[in-house]
Amino acid sequence: MDPATIALALLSGALIGFVLGLVGGGGSILAVPLLVYVVGVASPHAAIGTAAVAVALNAAAGLAGHARAGNVKWPCALVFAGAGMLGAAGGAEIGKAIDGQALLAAFGALMIVVGTLMLRGRKGGANPDVRLTRESASYLFPRLAGYGLAVGLLAGFFGIGGGFLIVPGLIAATAMPIGIAVGTSLVVVTALGATTAGSYALSGYVDWPLVLVLAAGGVGGSVLGRLAGKRLAARKNLLERGFAAVVIAVGLFVTASAL
Image 1: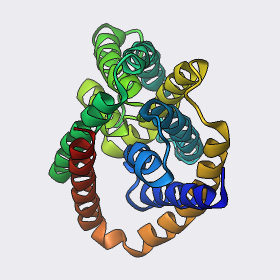
Image 2: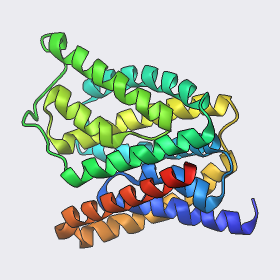
Image 3: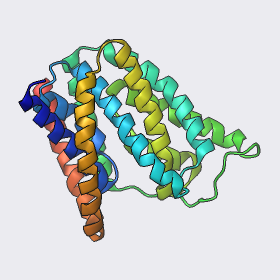
């Protein structure tokens, strides 16, 4: 990579990390457009594969703090992630078989849908004590596995973490509060990102030096994002709506450019 590409990749990684630290999610959906239109990755498939690695690394880094705080329902997360990995493996194979420009157009459409859903906000459930046990498995297991498979398919196809889908899926399946759903979702995001990344890596669609540069930028960006998030905590809803508007705008640009 030339110095200009390295600088753009660092800035892109910092922006992704900053958004993750500021609003607590959503930054990964910007990774593919940034890699294609800012860093200059020529292949949409390579951009998706590289972004998937970055997504998995970001989620794994954030998981430790939530686990220490007790915000992870591990049995629920493992069932959701297990089914999701099957879906992600299938989705990645489908995505690799589709024309790159068509895949970008579909990705842009997904961004528009995601941004619209983000504008509606997220509401948590009312069962903080939910647990996957022998007694509850008869109704919780199929719900977790069903939502996990569907979300994994989309995450693998588009090379995204899918947190914006996983969190509502966990809440719908278990009625857990949103704070616990966010922490639990990071287990799933890590698993789905790693599965998608592995599939794309086996096909030669991961730029490993670029992954390292993105990760380096992401570390600094996430620190700044968390600091800014603490200062602007009272305006979190406004920040999330502003970010949703940016996601919709970028989605429109990506779709128009691809078409």
